[in-house]
Image (cartoon, rainbow, N blue to C red; front, side):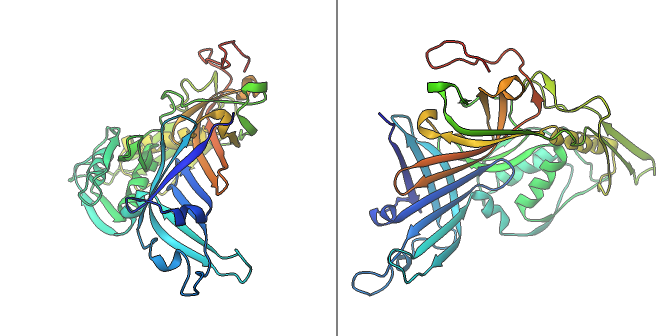
Length: 380
């Protein structure tokens, strides 16, 4: 018997009415590691029976920054929070055809609250990670910081770290030069967390995607691509304004490949080298860290795309977490990092999940546990 799929939608803390739920044509949630998470509600609207106005449109439900929350339940499992978001756009298509009019409501995750106020601000004698903790904890947001130390601080008499832009723009700039991720999301307890750290590719995998393995299969399609010409080395040079000395740095190897596979994607034979410029940095330590982040990012050169069979998988795939893949050969089977998931829930109760995965190594480490549901060992 197929597992039932249900969802719960709230608007400004109140469960969506029957009128809203009955009008749902489709709900899309885009969960992304490098971009803000988004939700789009596609709702059928029509002239009221008495001709006095339009259904839903005249009820002022989806006002500017109205809060939307969505969670899904697959079978008898627990509810899985998918998104906590704020309305940023409404788009209405009025049609003369019966049942043709549609309201599309678009909402963005809580980073939209960090994008409302552009600032010019000095951050003195602080590590980038200290700045992230301070901003996430600000009284205007009160997010729970999940921050990893960057282990580098600038001293006011040498260099002043200046913010010019919104809080989220600034934090993403800092994350980029550290090789970190920066995002805001709702955890399983429904709390909003602000993240600033390297990708957690070594965390416990959230599940296993199985391709072409009979009754164990839970993926409708899977495609893998390996770009072999991304930068493998990065060089940089800058001038220290204090003593006019040349500060040189070079990164030759990726630092984030441990545990992903047998062989790193960064080649040692005839590697591609890039020269970094216009850094805006003065000291060798931070230049080295930036060069390393460039090599680390380029090492994630194996990209897989596909679609989950939600009922067979038995849950919701989440971005920003690792997942195991089996059934695609020794080169492409193994641990992946989930970059993006597009959740699509239809008004008829259908639920599809389209994913993008990344990997920075090929082959198997030997520690992977590829087993079928009945406990019988299976090949990669």
